Image 1 (cartoon, one colour):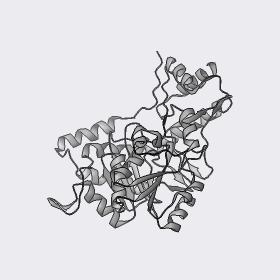
Image 2 (cartoon, helix red, strand yellow):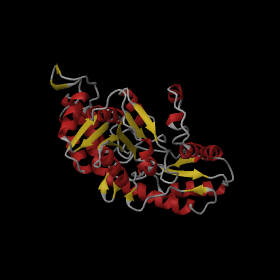
Image 3 (cartoon, one colour):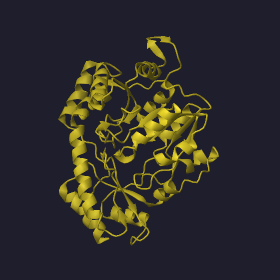
Image 4 (cartoon, one colour):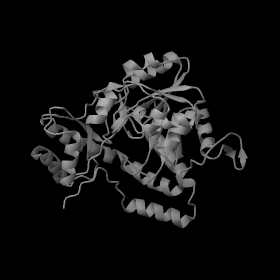
Length: 363
């Protein structure tokens, strides 16, 4: 039976050998491989510093703390994202303030940001959702105008570019290396920055507030990456551009075919960006022959796994309801009812891509 997964991490002989060498070395925690990976990744992104951590969520939390976020501050962000981007603000006892997204790009609507800025606003977290950069020129200008810190949630956007400049360089960059991402370390994350003070504080927070071992200067956590994870990352970073190229090619094929199916809307791509298609997310319109959920189930019955990213905006999650969030954010709510992500990962064969398209047409 055909079985096409929504994601498929690619691990080869190089990765197995790299992990084997770490196991033989006896250095299973943070060590030389982590330092090597930090240098490779920051060089790839184009920043002076890279701070490896054990998840994208840890990267976001550390980035906010390193930027000086404190209780009572407000942080503007997107409601249409994985909850970690907003939860990291709550970790700091600060308040997420949600700005609705653009219905085409799925990213935060830069035209709506300024009306949500108050005297308590400290930062903006932009989420480069599904691999497409936000409108960074507008957002950078807003940050400069109001003296706000810009944090980029690039957890789904490794190698994505805005006007030929990689995301993660416009503000404090936060990346995830979860197995579904464009590259993986199993679990893991990275902070990128050109600010030496931010980098130094981030390294301290990552390891129990220590600059020197057993001397704790500030409150910190155990957010360290292991050499095992870093060994995977060193191998994966060399392949990332190739993986992204294949994702883009797969997306072009799907776009060309799906564009002609009434009621299905392929992803909109801004003209000035490099979209790296962590996900290929379509919109199932009201005039399609069945509902989004019915389409998802029909594809599942044909061996094609799809996912709904995301079925409920963050501000509508039970946790945020308990915190008395009750904003009216119509684009986010509408997207949550109509989006569906199709397989686009680099392991897909041409035959599998054709099967996905033909199955949708037959339905």
